[in-house]
Each structure stands twice: as C-alpha cells, then as structure tokens.
Image 1: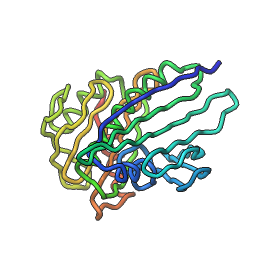
Image 2: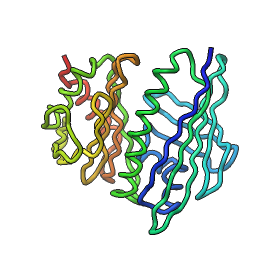
Image 3: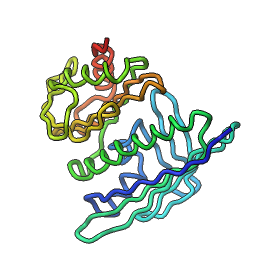
Length: 252
C-alpha cells in the first residue's frame, strides 16, 4: 500500500529570481547542479525529462510562471505512486532570492528508506545549486553521472574516497583535496559539502564534484554526480574517465 508524503526545503540563494528560474526551469540550468541530464519543454503542459544511467523518467509541467513558480508531476503508476515537485521563487533585497521547494506524492512499500534518501539528497543538491549560482553563474556544465552498485558499506567506501582525494575520513568543509582522474591532469579543489556516510562535495576552479552513497538499504551504490564547467571537456571521454576512477576505487 502506498504512503503519502510531503517534503519541504527552503534556501536563500546568491542570485536574482531570473537566474534562479534559469537554473531550475531549463535543461542546461538543471544540468549544472542537479543529478543526471534534463530536458524541459518550456510551457505548462510540457514534459520534463530526467535521464540517469540510460533510464528516463518523465513528468508533466503543471505550473509555469517564469521567475515565480515551476511545478511538475509524474503520472500515477499502477501501484498508485507518483511524484510532484514545486519550486516557489521570491526575490529579496540586494539581489538574493529565497527558493522554496515542496516535493510530495505517494511512495511504495519501502517509503521510509526512500523518504530519508530524498531528504538527504535535497540537502546535497540545493547546496550544489547555491554553489553553482555563486561560483559559476551564467555558465553551463557537462553533467557526469556514473554508478557502482555494491561498492561496499559506508564504513569501507568513505575512507577509500577520502584517500583517493588525498585526505582522511571524515573530510570536513574547507579541507583542500586533489582529484586525480585516469587520463587527465590532477585538479586541486576544496571540500564544500560534507555529510559523513551520505555525500561529499568538492569544488574546483572548473567544476562541482559530488560523491554520494545510497546506503545499505538501497544497494550500497556509490554514485558520482559531477558538473564540469570546462568548455573544452568532451562529455563521453570525461564520463568514461570517471567511471574508470570509480571502478578502480579500492573499497574492500
């Protein structure tokens, strides 16, 4: 039997309402901070598509007020589950904007695990949105999404990730690190988001790099959700390099 839920988040962003709208209601904007790759048909009744690891989910746009409100809703599945997301934009003085996000719907039998994952996930991605608008305004990222199911439990995975970037678990915000990817030069960065056992964020001069662990209840998946702002980066090569990095990570 499905379980109804509602999740609310609010964040003040260092950007104008127009900049926030472009980030949440366009494909290139979403690609620069959210997971996967997005496509948006810019109208009420249009379709919002999100593709992750070759799988595409679709939702219908049910709210389209540029600079003020964006909302979409998936179709209701056979088990009664669906997902609806609404963003409300409110401009503030001195060029900042408050973004309120409401996600609601019906989850399946494993609803508690899914709800917890969404709660933590929004902390990561709204933090990434804030970093995008502060450090890379007006630029478009190449989204890099790679997965490693069964990577290991958090007690093994996070020390391996920390060692791979030149640090010791748990890494704290402000810690300098270095990303060494096969076939590319090393990149210096700083930890800008950190929740032990859940996610790690690294910001460099040219990208936002996010490392996420799904938790044991969701298959111990280590998930990389990066946003590369280098205009010379080749998407396929960049994704393949990070997949090799992930596959070679010694987690056991």
